[in-house]
Image (cartoon, rainbow, N blue to C red; front, top):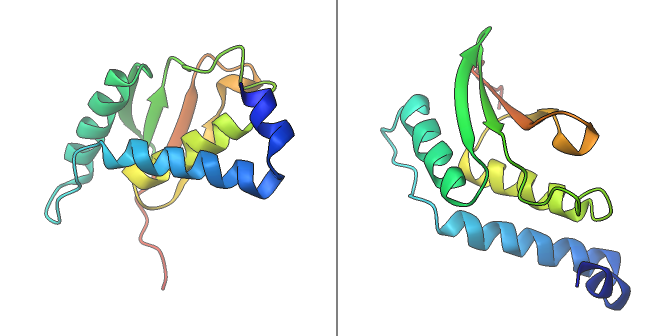
Length: 124
C-alpha cells in the first residue's frame, strides 16, 4: 500500500499525508495541561504510546529525559518507507513539545527508538 501511495503522489504530498496521520494520532492523546509537570506528561505519553503498540517507557538521564519506544509497530516496513519514521518523529514532537530528537533508532539497528527531551531552557 505504501509503495503505491508513493508511486501515485509527489514526495511533498506523501510527506503531507504522513504528517496529517501524525496529527490525527496526536489528537487522540490526552491534552497536555498548563500546570502539568514534564514527568506527568511523560507518563501519559508513555501510556498512550503503549496503547498504540510502542511499549513506551521514560527515564531521566544526565540532565534530560529519555522517551523509549521499545516496540516499533513498523518493523520490517520502515526500512523501505522512511516516511513512517518521519511520522513517528512528528507524533512525538506533538505529544512532547520541546527539544526532541532521536538518540537511537530501531531502523538503524537499535532495539528501540529513543527521543531526548532536554531540560535546559531554550532561548527565544
